[in-house]
Each structure stands twice: as C-alpha cells, then as structure tokens.
Length: 352
Image (cartoon, rainbow, N blue to C red):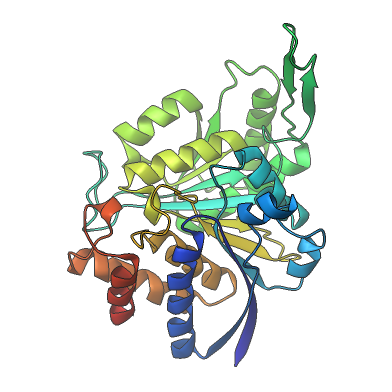
C-alpha cells in the first residue's frame, strides 16, 4: 500500500471550511485506490497567528514542511493584515524555498455551470495557464525612498533570468506537446522594453526544441480581451508571474466562478514538496457561514493526487465533480444555488 505524507495548512477565512471537504474526498478516493494518506495539520499558520505573535508561521516552518510529499493549502488573507504581509509571510516563502517555479491553473467550463460569457461553452473551453511562479515582476528588489515626504518614491524591480524563463517555458511546451495543443505566450514587448523582448527571445529559442508544438505570442492586453471574446481557442498559455496571475483569475471567472478554480505550485523535478491550493482566496465576507464552494479545494486535491502518481484516483474525483454539476441542481450560492458547503460535499461524495 502506497503511503503519502500530506501537510495541511488551513489558513484564513474559508480556508479551513474548504480544506475539510477536500480531505473527506481524498480519504474516500484513497480507500478505493489502496492509498494511505497521513496528514500533519498546521492549524495556526495564519493571519490570526500573525496578529498574536508577529509571524504567519514559525521560524522553522519551512523545515517542518520539507519532508512532506505534498502540501494542501486552504487560503491566506485577513482584512486586519495587509496582503503583502500575509502572502510574503507564508505563501511566497514556501513557493520559493521549495522551488515551486510552475504555477499551474487549469480552466474548464463544466456542464451545468452558467458562466457570464456567451462563448464559454462546456466541452469547448479547457485550457491551462502556466504561470512563472518565483521571479518576474514579483521580486523582492526595490524599496521606498524619502518616506512620508513630498518626494516619496517607490521602486520595484522585475527580475527575469535565463534559467528561470527557460525552465517554465520548457514545462509549458512539454505540456502542450502532451495535450496535442497549441502554446500561447503572453508578452508586452511593445511597451516593456527589456524584460519582455528577453522573454520573447527565449520563447523562440525554446520553441525550436519542440518543433511539433504550434505556438504564437499575444500582447497581454489583447490576450485578456480574447480570453473573454473567444476562450475556446486557447490550450496552453504561458506567462510571467504577474501576467499569469491576472490571466488565470480572469479565465476562472469566464468559466463561471473563481470558487471552482484549482491551482498547483509545482517543483517539477520533485526535489521538494509541491503545494496545491484553490484560487479563490480567504473570502472573509462569507467566512463562518458554511456556504463556501469547496470545489476549488477538491479539484486542487485531485491535482495533488495526479502529481503524486495516481492519475486514476484524480480522474475519479474529477468525474464526481462533473457528475454532481451536470446531473444535479445542488449548488453553493456563488453558482446560483442555496446548498451549504456540507450539503454540496455530501452530494459529491455520493457520486464518488
């Protein structure tokens, strides 16, 4: 029997509320496939801990996670803690310490989910955003000068390295090859004079190593418009840290709800644990009401199973998601229904 050690970080807001259903689904599918999942939960790694102790996680937090096979995260963020404090105190250090340089965000329109975009139809929209996850626009280089004075100045440097760009492009091209699809590279080289032409040049270089993968480049502003006007034309989209962040949230909204969107922070070489999380964030406005949509966390758990080498188990979870959405009218409020988190989870478990 295969055993995997999973680190659970419930986090803030609805994080604990969606991680619990994800664990129920994992346990159910694990029994079917002869897997043993052991969990270590880091319940106080959160904004509440920051407000109490001045840190989102302990000083040895990274070392505590190092021997996990994977990490499942609920959400990070609280109105009483600035976002840059919460993210840079927990999520981003984990991504960077464990070289999770691929942020993978699949976007799919499901039968039974009404989206806001006419052209986003089930069976036609099934794309993946591959976001560079450890450098780019989200660097730590920069600072504030003349604080509080009329000449106060903020400087934020984007960092694009050949190694960093190459490895995420190779992952994206290989993924497009496996899917038999097309790769689209997001750029803005007509306005950003150094980093984006550098990105474009390396895209062209790496494309030569994947001659069977058709590819194109699109300026980010036009690409955002095309995500809305014709989302079905895209398959694999590769982008820098900032562009990928924005595009993936936009695509999730096009698909019907950010509440159903999963994400993976991958270390493809598997030298370190990868981390899986729903895209929706902590949603403090509905926290504690029992109505959070657990699908983002459940689909993230399915991605974790696939990464751990259990694609059949992952498919079972995805098939159950498809069945409950296509075959029932059970929906949480973000999808136009009245079901609670527990009611939705129970129906999904019945299909599973």
